[in-house]
Length: 273
Image 1: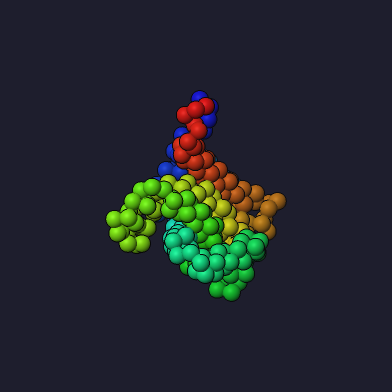
Image 2 (image 1 turned 90 degrees about the vertical axis):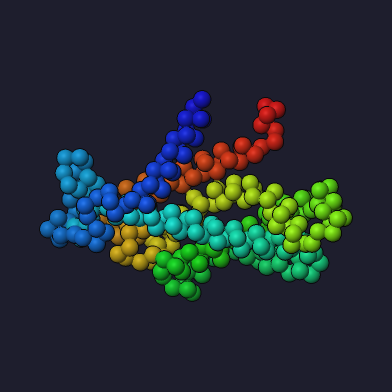
């Protein structure tokens, strides 16, 4: 019962995040760059004042920037995961169907990439491409496609040995027809579950890269940028880092809970417990 409540709370929170990302400009009367230096570092006022979560060192409304930061985090998370899933799926399907040297070369490329520490690889690619929102997305796609390729290859090899695939080959179905009409549909649930678990890691990676100055650049209100800007005032203006940090934690936890729920729904032994 408690687990169900937690899972439904995570789903509700994530739906709220999506709505906030879509309607962010309508939710507050301020803009992301609007600020008055005379209003700098106002503490959170709650519902009693105009700045519910306070202001930053330039007098900008923290709540407004936090809500717009939701857009950046979800955009980076969803687009990066979709891009990596697409790239990894194509590579995995090619490796699983056209065996021999093609499979060997592609899987060795995957092994080489997976041998690098993930965050160091992200930082290296981000430093080479340069700091921007577009480059952060490209960086995360390049850094995260390899696990999808290995996952898809393993699943596709298993599906390839099933009787309905052999029957399709026996009646003369071509490779592309079998892959896209029979193999890929049976992989979709696995891809959805893994992708949902990856969104949280991608959001944290974007925040970390932006915090270090290699990602989204000011004045764009990424959560990582907000934490980076607020670290100078950590002891005198705690709210500058506290609220974006909490949003990163809650978003990551909610996405991981949703992914875990999807994984359990696919568990073939669940009905036997």
